[in-house]
Image (cartoon, rainbow, N blue to C red; front, side):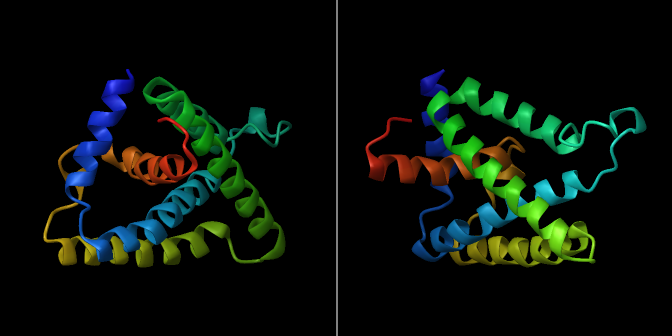
Length: 156
């Protein structure tokens, strides 16, 4: 399966060569991941799960996403799990300190981040990869992690 992750990262990288677009992705992709987590966190828990506060739609989505990453690359899955944990903590912290529903804050940031993404691709002159295959929405974070791993000498 290791070859599959490299093929996906290479294909994703084909439409992310421009330095400006890359810089935009370093900001916008992590922000979009967090905002999507905020949206999923905001989905009400089924009543029968109300007593188990940590068991919600977000933990289910994160578990499935983590499984996807484990299948593609166990080492990237570790990085994703750490980032997801940080995002989850940030979401809980924000929810605790504001009267504004976190999904409303996330919605504004989500729109701004996607404007940035599409602007970056306009500069690049290539369409976003996810328009070809929705799977690339999950490859974007892995692509960024792969750069960090390379710098740290960690194999993907």
